[in-house]
Image (cartoon, rainbow, N blue to C red):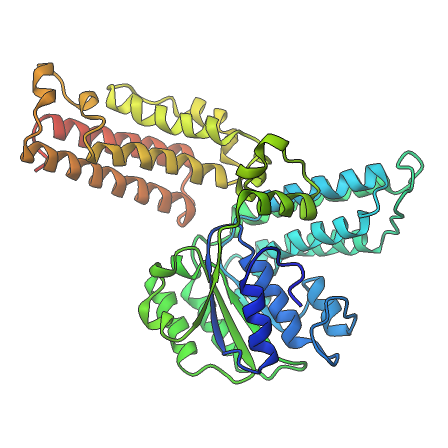
Length: 441
């Protein structure tokens, strides 16, 4: 068990807890991004539901394991926000290259791609979305995804077959492109930024139904980013969890998880793999290439970011220029900015843009950008009196609050990006003028 979780000591700890019958009903997988937390949670769900004896063998072909490997088991509920587009793009490249070259791992790469799509579509289970006003718009997209995946899985793709003679190759390529488009539409248009309270209540109801095979598993991703209402709803479940249900929470920042929740889960730490280990994951999972001189600095995150349609550096420079224009008294060219950033699709590009903006604004509080904010006598720029530093920190704080509000308007209230950024530029410009006039104290 856990053979697909590479270079993580947590797998040994989990295996031992399962063998000794000491696995708790609530677990927390905490650690760096791209450390394999979701992979481990899904594998744990398979092992706990396996009907073979001994349970959990990696090559087990019992009905339960086959469903879990394809991510179609009804005994797993996957909840929470996740950026899925990059993994889907990387998996698609792996699969199409394997088909085109007739590689021996072609079936494994199809399995990788199918799972990457279902890691997204599973978050839109009717269990979670019943009664949501988005259901009518979601349904046709999910139905199309299921139809395309079923056709793709039925196709007989033979390793070593010449792609020029493979009659289904063009159809495979077309299906992959269709699935990527549908997945991007699903993620950009319907994924909630945080888990709604209503979904956590539906999780509670689902958890109390008896499982047909083995234990049921609820996977709650990014538990450290949950809002208060959802955290409280989850806490009620964890206080008296059903005996045949295991809750797996994942988090990047363990300390950001509510203390009362931390006290009810057993933590399993996921280490940041070194460069050599990450390069092996890239090669073994995605069959990607890592330059020999980059092996020690290899990063799964960086590899996945290379599949963005726009370079992260371009987006970061756009964010810096956005703030620079405001500080210099110019109106940012919003439409041009959006075009440079590829229309901020996938939405991860918008996150990278706001990260660059946030870093720039935080520097204000450190005084690094003061020369940009002060007009008149440049000699006054050199003074470091306490009052001016306090005002500068207050300016930084208010600007960051405006950025957070802008992000919420886009991701939660579906405000247009252009309108939201224009309003943000106006808000920050007004705050800068107040600072220069001595109004912020």
